[in-house]
Length: 309
Picture 1 (spheres, rainbow, N blue to C red):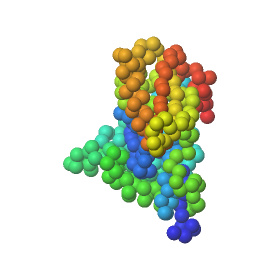
Picture 2 (cartoon, rainbow, N blue to C red):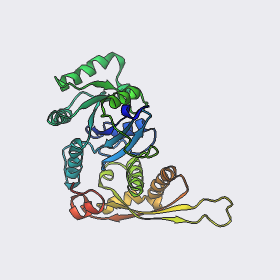
Picture 3 (tube, rainbow, N blue to C red):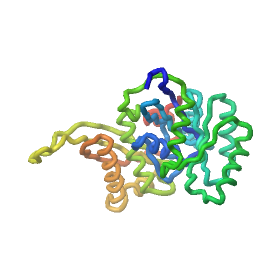
Picture 4 (cartoon, rainbow, N blue to C red):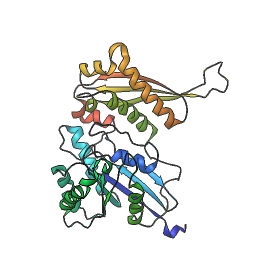
């Protein structure tokens, strides 16, 4: 394709927590670049995934869900999501099509009306809407959007339904421009951040209730280890040492589990994901540390990468 017809730009994925933004990013890119879980508010970083096609290069900015914050970390996450709106070429507002619109959706719609940016709306989880209720569900969201001149599409981030049309529509609305990143890149996040997120994803998947939102992960060291002796054709191993932070001793006990069983399960799951990311064997060692009320301490948040910007 002639470079004069090539589209490129940044698209912010905006929506309430747990609406499926990270799952949709992974579906569109075709690789796992964002962590997902059934727990709301999974995404903490404004992760940028890169999708390159012959016609376009789209930088997908996966943002934390916009919600009412209850601590300093929550305030910074919402600030990060709102800031992303002003730094992109296009906004994709993701709504939960299988649930009626709520006050949180209305708040985000009002916020986007004030920005004067191009907006595309997608009703996600459409595969969960019974066929006889689809017209009614779509009409409820059209009333929410009122006179906003935003295209409305339907999709399923889980099974890919409607994602090709969604991608084509995103490309059409991006400005003409050259590639911004090398075509083989799928994320501009540092390896250290991606590894920490893979560990946190396993915590979200295997623990419940008060533990997930009180957890942060710090990668303490990454180093290459020689292949074990006596193994022909053995690969170098990547050693990863990480600390999982929690706020209370009881949470540390849950994370470690009886005889270390829970921490072992978390470590095994994270190691398998890391080996796919790194494309080689990984040795992972996890520690658990109690840091009371870390989510409300500015210095600790800065250390963990949740800055004030």
